[in-house]
Length: 151
Ligand SMILES: [Zn+2]
Image (tube, rainbow, N blue to C red; front, side):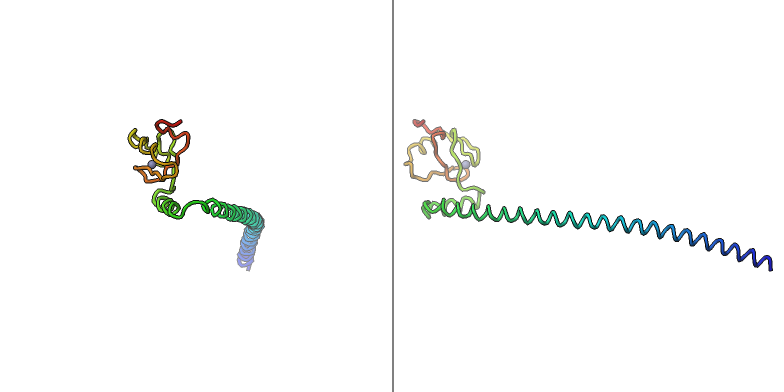
């Protein structure tokens, strides 16, 4: 009988230890849950703020795009259709359809034009479309082009 009592008391003591351990683990788990819920709230706030910023920037970009498209329509209105087709065809291949001719160099492909080519461009009428022999871009002539006999 005494042996049974000792055994039962030991069993009760073991079970109490297990109960304490489980309660400690429960407290840890509840603490982790509280921290996770707090993190989740923070993340939800960050997502809401980021989404609002994205929407604001997206709206601004859409406005810029609309404005730029309107400017393009106005800018190309005076350009002959044939020249515009040529520009678009070259642009599809090269990324840009035209390049400045500056200091005898095509700013599209960075090739410096030889004297012969430069002479031909110099003789071309002001409204004639001249193109780079290397990259096919339409060359935009200005006072900085370095054309022979011109300033
Ligand atoms: Zn070129």
